[in-house]
Image 1: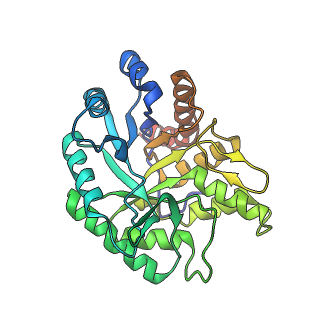
Image 2 (image 1 turned 90 degrees about the vertical axis):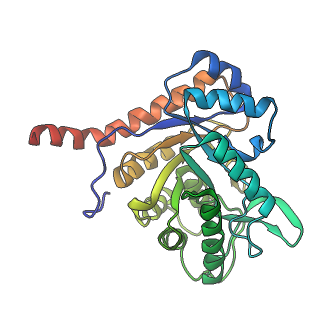
Length: 299
């Protein structure tokens, strides 16, 4: 339910898809009606070569969003200088519409876990992440967006809940938030499997309602997989109907926020992703149309 303090924009949201290798050629050939493409930043860190050439060609036709998985914004050791330098070079070359990464850590001492690990919901972890986010933003000369995580382990002794952590991060650092609706749902399903609550959809609605609308820069939608005693955010299937319902709730609260369809494993034909993108447009229109109608009547 939309809070009285925030009236969503009636404009249609920008909708994009994750542009992965199997669809490089097809997308450039077909040039479907999309508002933006999102790519994983680290795949294009090489200063030359075929991958960067393809990305430049895509950038001539579409806005591009750079989504990273390796900044390790939650690392107490700070951001890796080499990684940040490669990202800065890519940002300068591509001029993306958005740059984002995750509220996670992956680095400790000289080791890199090659995974997105959750940070403690503590004041010390928040201080470290604010420092790291600010360093990245200063280097890039622009705000970034930070994504909530699908987490399969938990730290004990939380000093705040996740929405409070993210809201405070955005307020202190000036970053935006990338709200992954599927990640919120996956975490709620896993909490249900741990018998922590019996209403995962309700828990997700409360999570979304706790996020400050003015912080949200992008929404992500993806599929997930049930693996017996755990649910995995595998980005390997169509968006679940309950996630679509939560997306409509998110649009009602946050307004016409740019929306991405992610699909990274068992990648289907491009037409399937385009159909999911069209579904996102239709779902958002169902929520935003009443606001448009009211403005028409008032005029």
